[in-house]
Image (cartoon, rainbow, N blue to C red; front, side):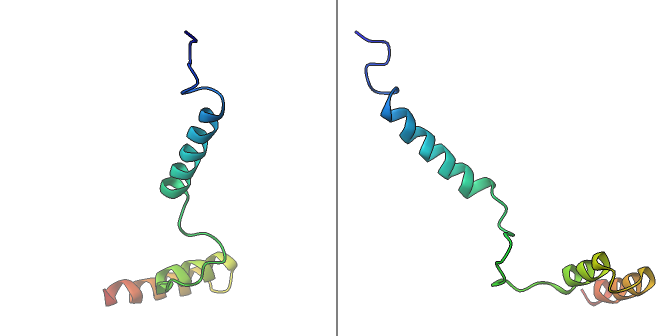
Amino acid sequence: MHLFDGHYGGMHFIWWFVWLVLLIWIFFVPYDLPYTKNRKEDPLRILKKRFAKGEITKEEYEEAKKILESDN
């Protein structure tokens, strides 16, 4: 009798690997992938991006952030 008997070695190992990679992809890949604009961006996220790009100053960012957070 062989150690693996053909059940967990050879081609069966490749299919286990494929299923493992698929499960990891489903559960651990961030769903905020680039080029996916189908979900609505919230105003605070847009504000953070504008500040990070340098489009607005720190004072403008903090003022707008206070306004957005007070609306909730």
